[in-house]
Image (cartoon, rainbow, N blue to C red; front, side):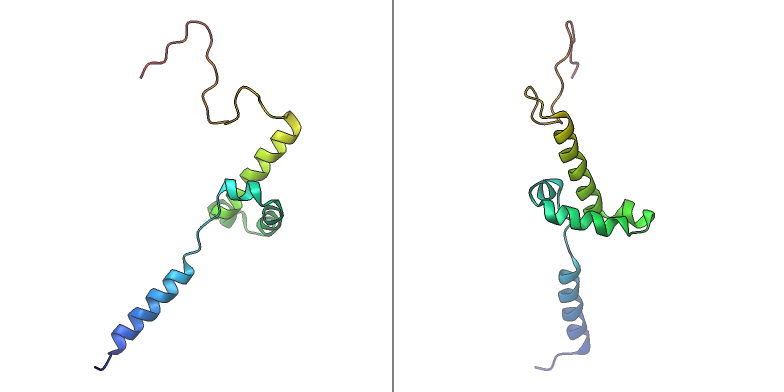
Length: 97
């Protein structure tokens, strides 16, 4: 069976597109890998500001550094470990859902 050039090109394109799909690392990843975070931030400092805003890895590394720096400065909050949890509300607060 003879393969046509179209199938060969589609196969090569599919293979290259899978290789090009490099997933962005998460904030949690950079929280646990401090050396990689520092290296990524150094790369991000050399980038164009427009590219910096659209690069997910840079945003995750910078956010991870910010969270770690805040924890070093302010310490950890014993009442709320997760910063995304709702803070306790005052007397008479009613949450309308």
